[in-house]
Length: 79
Image 1: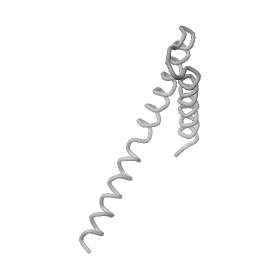
Image 2 (image 1 turned 45 degrees about the vertical axis):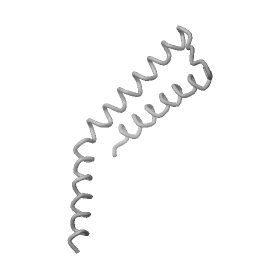
Image 3 (image 1 turned 30 degrees about the vertical axis):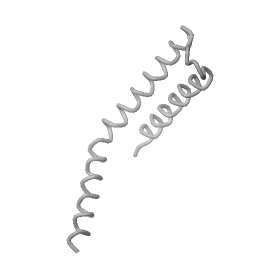
Image 4 (image 1 turned 135 degrees about the vertical axis):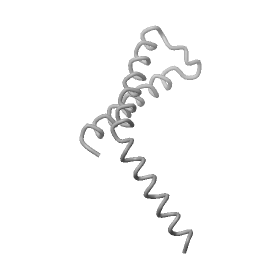
């Protein structure tokens, strides 16, 4: 994977950590304030955007890896 993918992965993880922290801070009622809802929205959008970019930019590589693993397993079954 390239540097952009690594950076996007880190950004997505950090955004999700921020989301988790919001939930932890609002346990047990999860009644977020207006400001917290805005922060939640921004963090979720950031995570979704980065995850979508990671997926789209690496889809062909990931699919090829899946196919390679399938072929390896098929070869083992024949033996």
